[in-house]
Image (cartoon, rainbow, N blue to C red; front, side, top):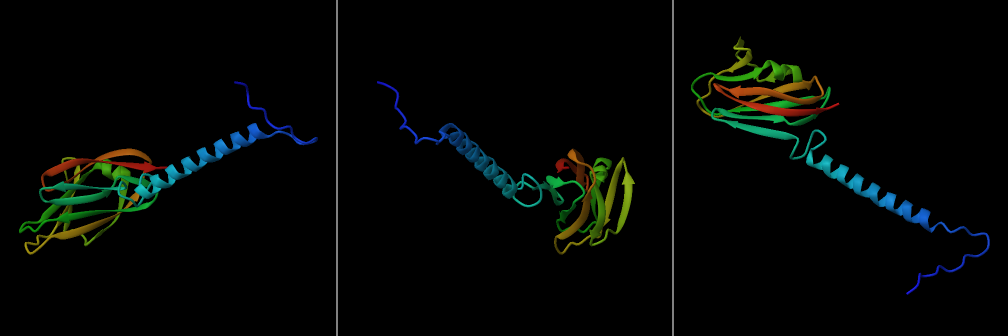
Length: 165
């Protein structure tokens, strides 16, 4: 069986079949890369929004929703949910958290702030009637992977955040 012969081109025409096939291959690869980039954005793998951009830590005294992926020098927020309690509720962060994020505001404001064992504590008033939601408005400070310890009461957990430059 022999090779398939291409028809002869008219005089003055140049055969650009190889160039066209390379161009089409590059075009399809570009479409695939763009589609993957778009999916990563929609899933929250490149910043705010999407199911993978945030994480919720569940602790015995409540839960903390914080960013797992963010952008450098961008505003963020962290939501602390306390369960009903007849005692004052305490939320703690360590110094590594304050290197990653600066706290712009706390809503509603804390009753008191204290430092103990290398950690900063925010005390909020008791509310036995129902849960309380606290919003920390943050500003990202450093790019790269960051770890910090956050906690409610005596229970603490490590959390990870990646901040894109």
